Image (cartoon, rainbow, N blue to C red; front, side, top):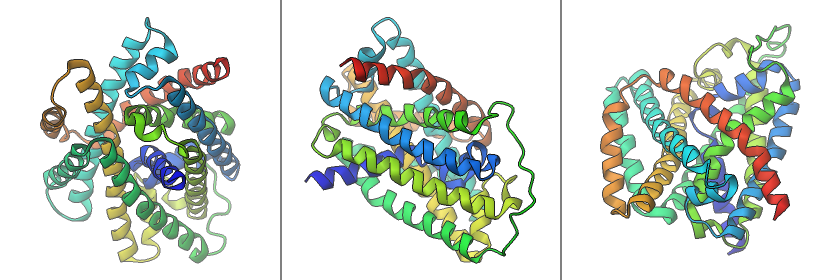
Length: 343
């Protein structure tokens, strides 16, 4: 039972962070590969931080016995600030869910030649079915989909590294981001960028992750994230010509043939689904706890509200959502450590 819980928690941790931006290679390019091979050291640092703060989050959750992220933030930040953080995170969760649905629509339109609304509708149906079964459903959907996504993406990246033409990554000047000038700070910012959503997902799962083996799962999840990010980073360094593309890892997969690229698009869709499921479940749990209303009616209503909004372009949504998560996370990192040490 302990290892089963550890595996489920690790898969959920990876699923909360390994969304479309991660699996597409865009996040790894911006936060790590742009620093060249120093970025690989940044990935190792980020993996250590993910493992450490994952342990801290689950340790605090077990001590506080919370079942919603609002309760967690209230104990973490105090009654004065927690309502404002709660409101902002609720908005970010909703917009994040819309972003994943919009991205799925863009994938179906660009790579399969179908209407974007076909991808949005199919994605919304999968989200609804997963959220319908509450916490256990979220854990199991991650247990099934995350290993599949993880192993396939990892395999594609490794094959690309091994089969790439020798020397095609040499002599490349990497463009810098004016907001991130140091690889160490970039690793910290990347963790803060992603940790907020992971915290919300874990807190919303309540008793499902307050079991023996949960904290071990956080350590395993952090290590898995580091392994996957490291391999993707190495593949991007191996093929620097893909760095300017919106979805660079699809181009890397395309170097192995048409079918690997096609399958990678499908796996990227799975990444969008798992990220959207985490957002939707956390938000529904919050609304139900605040208003004492029906869980499944809330789930249906939320998706009906999100569906037309998902027609907004994916790139426009991501441009504003991702930085907000990063700023919130920078506040949470020291608070988590201080509260953990204090208790």
